[in-house]
Image (cartoon, rainbow, N blue to C red; front, top):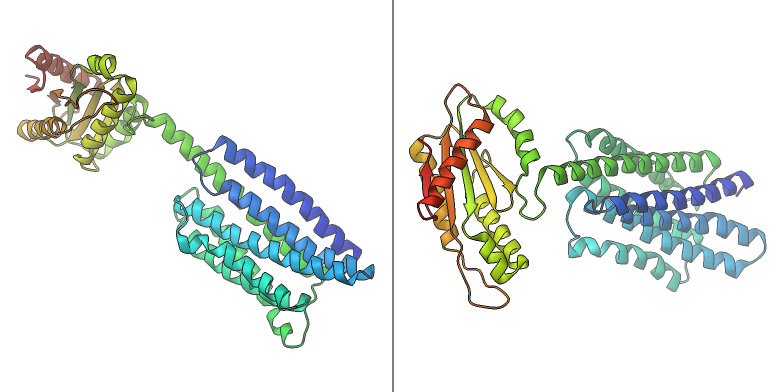
Length: 382
């Protein structure tokens, strides 16, 4: 191995350390984005393994240290295969936004077991090269399969660039396969340079994808109430700004308030009050269509916004929500189970597009009327 190739591999190792800290920082400020830190750590392990396998083996061999050279070969291949499978882990977690399935978790142990088995059987550098090339090709195909899911902007372009990079790496690593039959396993400077350049592009694209996902997460946190997962005021007005344009029929607003909620907090504690709000929100959202909006306006006050609903349909929807809430039992940490009722006020807009603010005011008036008449009822604004 030439000195220039050795220096290139060592500088790539330093770059992998820098990239790890970049991915660690992004993961730290974007805790809801999965797979970021896994990618940074796996790429670092992959690079260290490749450096040990190539530079370490060649350096010890040239120094006449045969045992150290063989140890560097096996250890490097083991770390490299584990790191490569870890990159597959990262892609699955990032794209699918879920924990790994048991079969996916097994990818790293299986990948590590291959070079360990060759080590135990007394294999040499050539055998480990064949094994790692097989692992790399399989993981690249695995990554390609999952990256194809990212079709929407802004993820599409960096995802397609990563797919291109994975495809090029598969071709690059596959190019050495014909040489196996002739015991040719060497890599020249051009091969190494192309390999490192593609990996640099993959890391750059992964950083782009992470930044887009982090921005999306921040946007969602700004639009949704973290306790109930309902839209907040900002999110509701943001949705209405585009939603009204797609619906030329008048809006219907249902204002909702939990009865005696302050008493629940005082008697059972705020933790129980939070659970009441969460179950109420889940109950309402499960009873709405995808084209109906649900928002927390503040405290125990909520609103449902729908379109194209006549007076009878609106009343039926409100009564259904009221009855669903009445059937829920809440069990506090201390004391007897209890039930919570809600009061609802309905305001139906005209077909000319009555402003939402005015509709919300009229729905609130109807809600206050429901409370004056004894709560746990539905009132329609005249």
